Image (cartoon, rainbow, N blue to C red; front, top):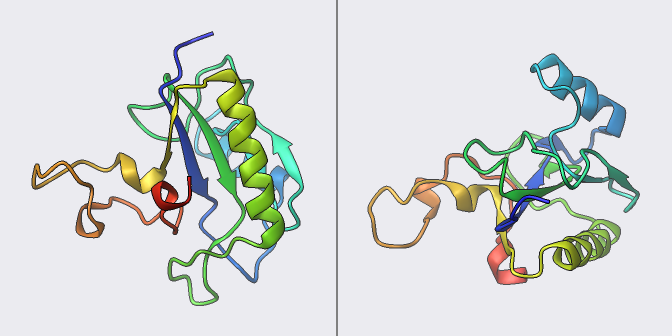
Length: 146
């Protein structure tokens, strides 16, 4: 298996009021030219977990990180007006912990990050600040929680 340095958390960037099924996620990724879902794990609002790409295969989730990471995505991330918001349900939070623990079994030294934490450090101060984020995804501070 390839060396895994990161476990990257994403949101699907869908409104908390909209159902976004795993099959829709796969179809949307295929429309963008990918062979299937770009993530390893997808978590619905009810906590139901779907396996996307195999853990040994290169992903399609974050340019420059697809070959050295695992990727987990939760359904949601936007409020009803499409503004970034932590929309995770208690079931999703529990499923996310389980997914991270599973990934850590496969890659014990991997750092857990949010997609936005992969943004460039524009001012070179060693921290990725909100004004440097390329995206708000996953719409919560992963480093504070994990």
